[in-house]
Length: 172
Image 1 (cartoon, rainbow, N blue to C red):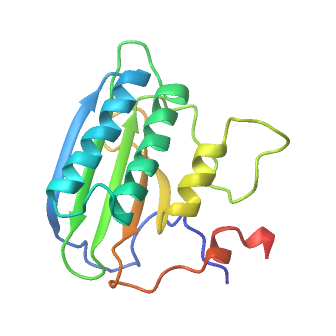
Image 2 (image 1 turned 90 degrees about the vertical axis):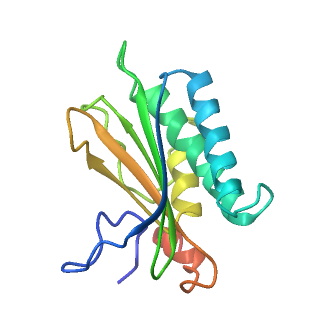
């Protein structure tokens, strides 16, 4: 069985891993809000010991950029902000996870590893997320209308790196 990056939860019966550090904030649903969210995630990761030029910081900053841009472009509801949560788990494997929540319910991204047809710009962001993240998924928003798109990055030395082919099994 090919492993996709769109798993929605840990293995059944698995205890949730304790959160070691956490940062959460609401942002204006605008390109400026998305840019600020990415910068604050990068800054917070640096303060947590993941330097700006390090792989974890650069990768999670790019993932955050794609998820927040999608929240602004596809999840915008007039007068509503998007919410970002970043946390690092303790225990194995240590994981960095970013969650972006918007209030739009009817526009849910497809969990697919397929390339978008033709030269369409839309849809490329989640292909980037799928390629960079260890796991990612979409879940209904827990405390109201909308959805949360999340992505995880397992820290090096914590778990074997996923095989690049597992990201796009259709290309195997």
